[in-house]
Image (cartoon, rainbow, N blue to C red; front, side):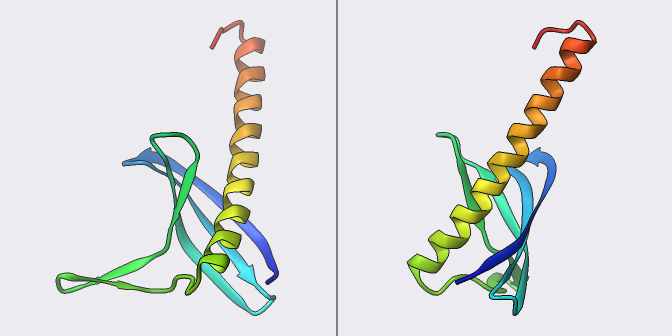
Length: 102
């Protein structure tokens, strides 16, 4: 399976949610609005979108086997960690330039 155009959009953290992800599978289908939550034990977990219909939550899309889910989660988490690491480095440089200690 080919995953491309993986994009991470950080959000103001709320209830563990730290970002949304989107990606393209096999140059054929776009998947978006995938939630990225920070785990209490460290790391991230991926949550696929649902829609509330009455009292039920209906799945919009999700992987149908463990291997596919793991491939998507790994690709998203790697990109997310890369983005947040770069952001932390920029914030550290900014703080040091202003004479602040983190």
